[in-house]
Image 1 (cartoon, one colour):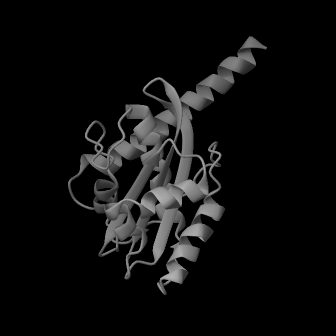
Image 2: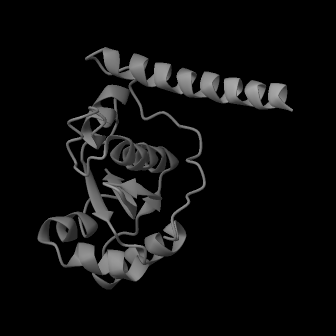
Image 3: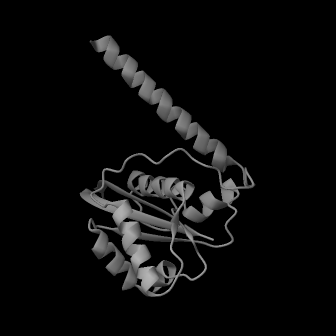
Length: 178
């Protein structure tokens, strides 16, 4: 039994090490690595109580009321949103700039050679209800401007539960691009 456990543990460590090495390669150069947004693997199933599908429907409902184009989910943006959530918990830093890790959304987009001419990020911590997330973003001028941007159509949203500064929290990240 112990041998099986250690083999499983070793495989998990190897998998984690290969992921870390891939990010090291991604960020060691100052030049973009690719010229178009790559299709990443699917973001893992979230442990968050936030239903991303419902959140996107609520956002699009609000946009429709303002006669704005509907956002279309982009799996690559969703994966980057997952990276951002994970990074905030790993580094215990809730910020757009990601100063401890250099994994800000803008830096990730730059390093992969994003085809988007415009990108933006909305973050929220401590909310586990889709309606309250949309309402909070609407009540903040900066977040509201992003939520109702006229010329942006692609969106990626990810929500994650974890321990932040000693307390269990939910962080939700929304990335948009044109």
